[in-house]
Length: 185
Ligand SMILES: Cc1cc2nc3c(=O)[nH]c(=O)nc-3n(C[C@H](O)[C@H](O)[C@H](O)COP(=O)(O)O)c2cc1C
Image (tube, rainbow, N blue to C red):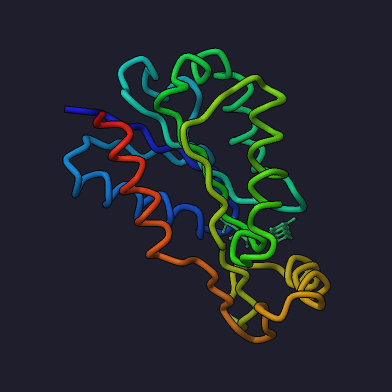
């Protein structure tokens, strides 16, 4: 049975829900899956990457950057990830991923460039829309909300006092399904 490790970095939780949804799709396709939150897991507690047929690595984006722990993981395990090139999938969750006009740029800026600079190849990459929660109950602080509002001035998809959940679950599931097909080959 193929075995896949999903690792993700998150700041406010929306990437975590994407990782969990991908895990569900993999399980439905009879792939044994382990999911790890890079924000709460110490390096010494990570499983041996050699045990996995494939790796799915995800991060949220803040001012163009992956989370610190996702960045650290990529750097530390670059050699191992290179050896997984036929089974490595990489995704980000971000505002630009939710905008079809900005998605290709998001793939390039937030994923391709990062992998290229570490000489890592991936079989699949994708920029998913994230969640830019501007409601009163939001986990975002005022500073983060202000930054989003400033960026949103140019983006009609993002509205004030709205959860702005730009995650397209069909697209996320489709990515998961295509990844399963590749891993099972
Ligand atoms: C302070 C801040 C800065 C952000 N910067 C960017 C950015 O540069 N590009 C982008 O596409 N999305 C940006 N976003 C949107 C986040 O990537 C999006 O909210 C994502 O879903 C967060 O994932 P998380 O909940 O897993 O942390 C930003 C969000 C915040 C709060």
